[in-house]
Length: 223
Image 1 (cartoon, rainbow, N blue to C red):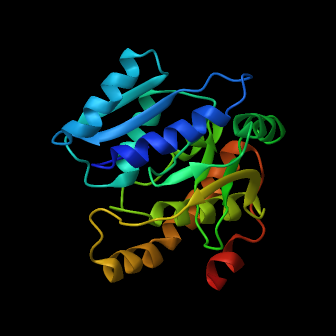
Image 2 (tube, rainbow, N blue to C red):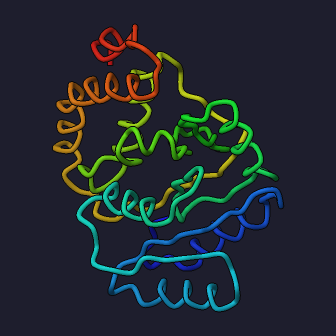
């Protein structure tokens, strides 16, 4: 969970997840904060001192959101990874159990949370097996949210399947995106790098033993 200067929201997001988790799985929370964000750092230190299952990375600000997420996932290995913002609240009791059951059915899966509000948002749940064959959870290209779109495209092109939304509910009411700039430029980057995702999808399908994707090129052309 990347966070900057929003301790109240960060606390609410983590508390809702922790309060509603089952006791069936070992869950570790991890926060990414910047060197100059003393408030977030102190909050994480205090939680850790209280025995809360939390870790944190405090360091120079990454140029890309995906880059820091990938670094944390490489360090804090897990069976599945949830990338969640600090402006959300979890609404599903036993959310981790639903994720665990989905991972048992599709061990290489990429899954998605649902949003309680009528706004389309994408919060991924990525298995370790997918992370390994894909070389990470996200790319290292974008300063903000385009990576979730890249990931959902990769999944659909590699597996010939629709996106899998679990019965796990977040309420996402976004307010402000840090470093929000040059949106038109990043939209062009996202569009023009689709051929790279086509190649990557073929590679992922091969490594997962899924065979040659049948709908890949028609899907990419339609998008």
